[in-house]
Image (cartoon, rainbow, N blue to C red; front, side, top):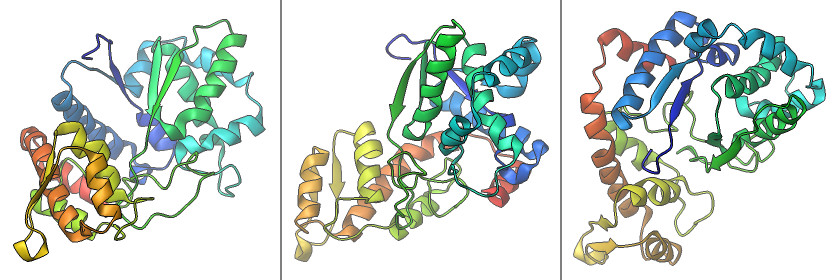
Length: 289
């Protein structure tokens, strides 16, 4: 948005149903979609929010284009893109709905008339498929931009095939693995405090990843408060200097977690305080995440 891009956030409610999220209950999905919409509007009011249902109802060509896309997709190639759903090609419990998901995502991109598609690293395979299909159909081929996935706070489990070369991403299905906008200040602190953070290890360390990609994205520095007998307070003006101290065990995980937790509270709480959650929606979120 700051660079002058006309930004669209696509809330894929039907994809959520196909992937059996939120209990596969469409009424729940509809209500939680509204929560997402409100949250995105607070974070970036300039963004255009589009709900999948609204797109499909307003564009009568959508389903005919979807069918045309499927004619260019082999079953084997489709299965290879299932990492976009957090699934593996060889998963046994794959139903026809799961196989519709990649074709719908391709149709969404065309229907939204996108010049740039922006998603996590786990979406690369579907965007490569889109490139090949759109070329054959003589449609505009979008530029694909992928960002790093934040790992979950629990101990990482290597599954490079499933997550496209990344460690397990922060998941909504495990409430202990991620930080949510609706988490209270104390919940944020507690989650970070329990997060996996092996002393001296800079590989696959979720707390360090959050420090690098979230804290230093929002702030120029981070201050670690600790007693004098443990070295006293220290401020870091770059992630590299913090990482160096951590790798040399000059910075203990407990002290890092305390500082990161406080930084995240400063980032999340202003948004959460503006996000009005009804008791019904609050319970829906807590019971389904």
